[in-house]
Image 1: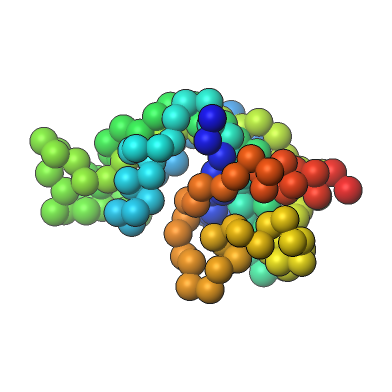
Image 2 (image 1 turned 135 degrees about the vertical axis):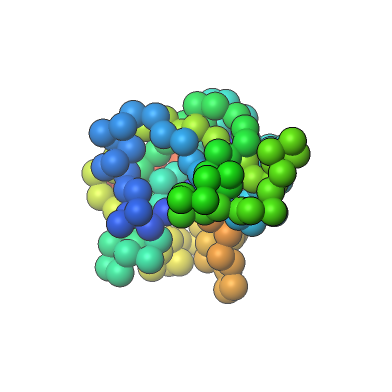
Length: 153
C-alpha cells in the first residue's frame, strides 16, 4: 500500500465536499511528475491525507481519503469549457490522468503546516521543502500515521 498527501484549495473542493459526495474524480492535474506518479504508483486502496492549501489560517491536513479508482484519462482535458482544458492533448493518446478518491474521514482538528514543520518525524515531507508545489506527493506510512495521530490531539 502507498500513502499520499494530496493538496487542494478548499474554495475549489474541500474535505466537506468530499464527505458530501462520497466519491469524486480528482481531475485537473497538469504536471508530468504528478501524472506519472498517478499512472505508475497510485493504486486502488492507497490512503491519502487530504490537505487544504492556500487557505490562510486554515491551511493544513484535514482528513483521509482512499484511492477508489486507478488512473484513467482526465475528461476535462478535452472539454474547452472546463477549468483545465488542454487543446494539445490527443484523445487517442491522452496526456492527462485522473483518479477517483473516496471519503474516509474528516480530522477532529486541522494539522497546520506550521505544526508539521515543528514535528521532527515529519521533516522528510516534500510539502515542507522549499519550492515544492506538487499537488500530490508520496509520504511514508510513519508520516501518515503521525499526521493522523496529531489530528486526534
